[in-house]
Image (cartoon, rainbow, N blue to C red; front, side, top):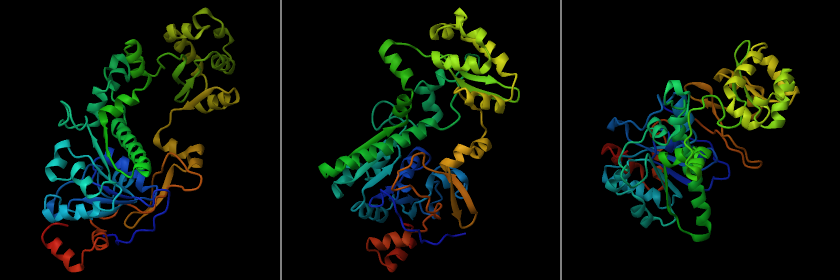
Length: 401
């Protein structure tokens, strides 16, 4: 079913900004979603259907992943390998605020849509590039995929259990992190532009982003050359912090500090553990974590997760259940926060997508409309930059749009 080209009015703190989105797969769309949800006019530039090229992974266009990543955007089809297609892009750049791409570093130069070329058209443009390894250097032309980056950035070497070997995180952590860091960088550049009047080239890579998210493990190596091992479900230093069995499942507990440790022992009725020398101090508990976890597991198995949660809440013990996705979205706090946002799709009817994880008190984000059909907004966008109906028909005949 073809959607009409009409899109609801935009509102929000970024409504004055125009963003040209050349990104695909996950990192780039994650970045641009931060602008689309907060009101920016995002034009998703896609290849015409006649070229039979994929515009990125994410499953079917009407599937959950694609709809979650590309909502709130208008769609323009454009053949950037055709001179007329490049001419259209350059006209769009004239009054755009941001253009974002995640091609291989050499592709944009070959097409003539690199930062140097486009900034001559619009010196105020903020040009965002996301890559696997950076725009230059010995790995610049390598394809960068999330699980490869997790391995290269050290994540897989310290994730999971030693007996299982290196273990990837079950989400596209490098992609998502790079997208969010890039969005932060673009907004920083836009803020700086308010004083300088000049745009600039913003660069983010999966490799840098993943290393940054290694956080204290990376810092400890840089400071002290400490190499993290695989602690499994244990915290590297704060014990007991981990996963413990219950009568009907598992529960997570964090009680590393002395006051937290005492509250846990009180809630468990485990006064006998509180002052035992192997468990009396934070350092001792870290050294004796295996024996301590066995002691605690024997006690947590005696009740259900729900029973322990009630006990721990009364005793101010930091704890939580191990939820599956259905449990997550049925959770009272998750429902209260409005994480699942309703969206109406013309073919699918009412559906839900994942909303923004932060709120502004006066200017909230909005899920205004689902993913537009490919090229659904092409004519209206071209008309705003001076193309007539005859021009558009000719462009379509030539395979430009």
